[in-house]
View 1: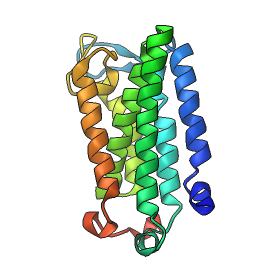
View 2: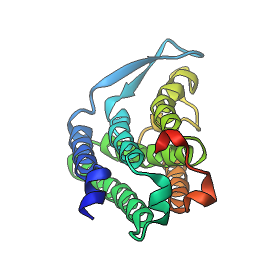
View 3: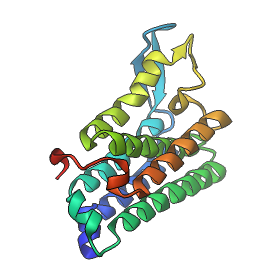
View 4: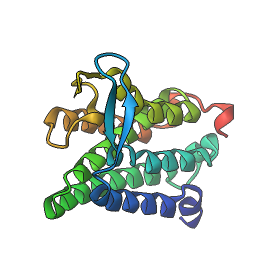
Length: 201
């Protein structure tokens, strides 16, 4: 267990999630302008909606530090630990974001939690079917692409879930669907998804 905690960077991931919850409550007025390709000049991306990329990338980094073929045949239930940890992170972040929003009035904390679940699910799906490098790059560029191509006259498209206000239910549904699909893919044996790539060992 000590080996797993160190390799998967569990303390760093927990610290990053705690920082996201804090900043989600106090940094909701900070916005990052992203140029819009069609239908406008720029979109003001709330910083809390981008913060979850940090713990998601830390999770991916921790996943890259193991030897997938060895872990797949190890006696220790590494895949079970990984999936359980990521599921716990998602559940606690959603609960924490909802609590912060309900008690402080900083509603973007709930959106931050939603985006963590969606980013994590997207990253795990990309990791399952491509590689860790593609997953890290893809999940990082995805919200920027949503802002650049998914906004028309200041209104985000329905599919651009990372951009919507926390009260927009379809965005939560999309993020939850991605999160569940990604966690399900992470729980599958490596042989059931794809062979491990040499670059990930």
